Image (cartoon, rainbow, N blue to C red; front, side, top):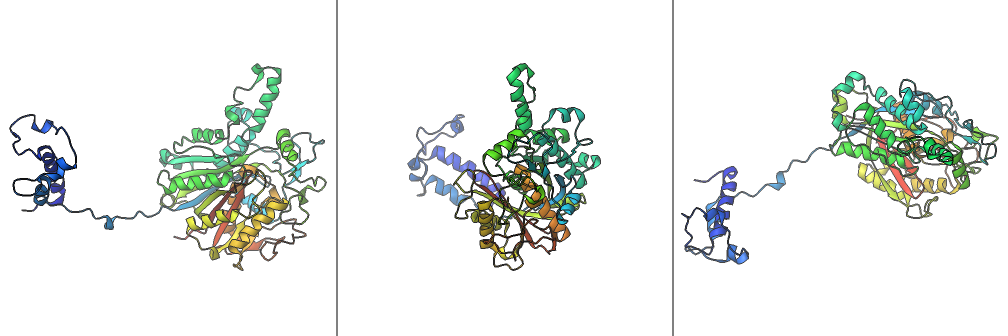
Length: 494
């Protein structure tokens, strides 16, 4: 009689264990009650397999011949289907509107959100313009008590995060049905609560007793995500990534990876920054990288134009609701686009300049490989393009090296209209990318009056919006210290 493998395997294990205890000692007294509690004084290979039993074979080999073993069939392992990630909600707070449709509509119309700074007296500053948000209110999204205490970066984040949920159809009733242990928040910031901390320093000049007790926690970059999770009761992964102007893309990619791994079903991801305050504007002005076109603010941000003279600071927040595909379908969510993947690398070169050998191309190629995308299918790129002399060209050259053979390729820069939102830039530009996929229209590059000699205007979107049937879209972000990040979206197909 042959024993089934489900019985034979544990039985044989038991027998082999017994053989290990008895091998080399045929006179063992099996009647001693302590037999199965004793071990040989020395266990080594010779003890186990080297000695012969009376029938001529080793003790273990004899037992093995008695047992029926079936090797495990590794060839027949079931390969798990990769979990797909889709975008089901968008939330934005920006110089061009606080609703995703309004925001993108203004982009399509070529409207500039850059203006004179009104938040403080900057008459003595070399730069007096920014993509500043005017008349913002968090009423209905953030409690009045928190609104008085929190830094604007946190208020922008909380508002955009909740708007992404509302846009995604997550009502109070829908929220009750979610497994909150599988819902997380990763919304980063490049600079965190600069205003709260700056005010604390001024208070300290008088006395430490004058300092806001929330000045430290509300200045940290993770606190916006933390407060949003507390408000929602979401108990999944919650942290902030701070990688300068590449922050948002890394948060989006990390959030998607949590979904792909099965750890979560839903993630709020993006970035927020609010640095249009004296120390923020003054600090960037000291780096000599800001535009000084103060008399003509709407013309100041001009990526790829030969007369560009530096970037324009902006502020705001962008949040995407990412969701596992089957989870989204079960609740009947509207799917805007599919997130295919992404990558991030480092130039390992300099604090404020990209590497002169276009190392950003490595990030783009890795993003395509991880997304399973052929470069010929990428026909839209939302570039980082900040309106600085060197960085604009280096990024453009890397992109053209990757995709230049594609005659359908179109490229634009959202920053031409809203300025540079720092840690929030990638998320707001990802929203613009998703809206381009959804609407079939890509927004113009404004102020590109005299294209740089190193660029091909056949690749760059012109001064008016253009219709484009997007196959695959890539959104780029680059930051101080050399982080490169590329994320990939495409129309959702069942």
